[in-house]
Image (cartoon, rainbow, N blue to C red; front, side, top):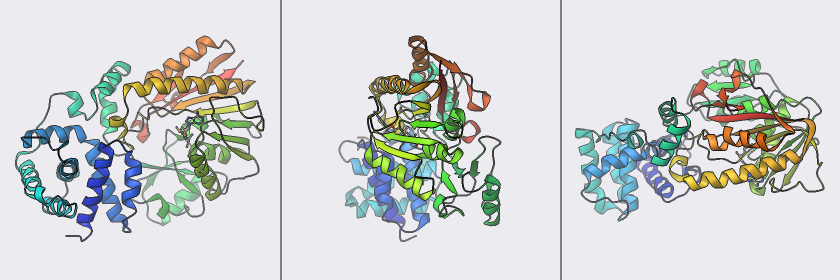
Length: 433
Ligand SMILES: C[S@@+](CC[C@H](N)C(=O)[O-])C[C@H]1O[C@@H](n2cnc3c(N)ncnc32)[C@H](O)[C@@H]1O
């Protein structure tokens, strides 16, 4: 057995436990991952955690058949160990001997030696009998009931495909820094390095990486020629498409993917706002790594639902409002979102989105364009909000976006998760008359 194998399971069980207790998977993983220097250990840790969280409901349903009394409350860490054990066997299909023995060893290392016999028995039995199956679409499809119902209501034809896409692993997408190089030049470097990749027709700077490799190890990373950004996320700046020299405002800029893309596209005057100063620092760091012109960019930590501070220009030619949202379009990347998000969060997000949009509008010049986008697939945050905005603002009209931006959704366009390998995203482009 790989000597780090049990340690990886220890870290996985701890991370899964934290997620079950409400922490984000990203934060839990960041903490646990740092203990491993070897990229293979890190990759295994991520695969086990994602597998367990993504398939949590089917695994818990199966566990209930194996255990006379659930462990979730009595011994949450043992429950997490069972989840990661089942995920290794039934989601990742890892070799059974290594998966079971490393999980048992992890139980001992975590002071759960007394549960080793039980964990061994459950995992072995699951191998012999398989997992109990449910007829309930929420259990089978690994989504909470409220989200399943909402998807069925919003996407009566597509809800099942959306859930399947949410349970699949997302590919790695890059964006080429067009200010410094071309997509063809980066593709040639990838070719030389033997990295399998694919160039979609649109958007023009996107590259999908088809090998399992960390982006930081790709050619061009250290030189700031590439950055990680999902295909659908790259469409927001393409839709806004401010011209050269435009005064551009990004009201929810952090961690900075779309802001950097705007800076790479055209030498515009950029004002970048985010309420979270720490996250805004990440935007500054990204601009540094990509070597984007700093003199045309201003950063400000501020509440974008309130009028901008006097120190900043008051009117803009183009505004990007990439609003905080339910993140229901990126569940395949952040599977904990489906368990953590609650219906009441959608109402609170809607209030914030509305306030942000109203304030953004105040800062748009007549003739200017505002792109509202979310990584959500819920209509309340997308087409319904856009329709309400148009109804209340006679000086606003929606400009058409073509089919490259997804299917028609009210006055905007929606990409569903998995389409062309991208995340779920909504875009609507308003012009101020
Ligand atoms: C979806 S993310 C933006 C992603 C970013 N556009 C990108 O491409 O990397 C939403 C951002 O909105 C910020 N935010 C939330 N409420 C805000 C507010 N009232 N004012 C400004 N920013 C806010 C969050 O801190 C978060 O960074």
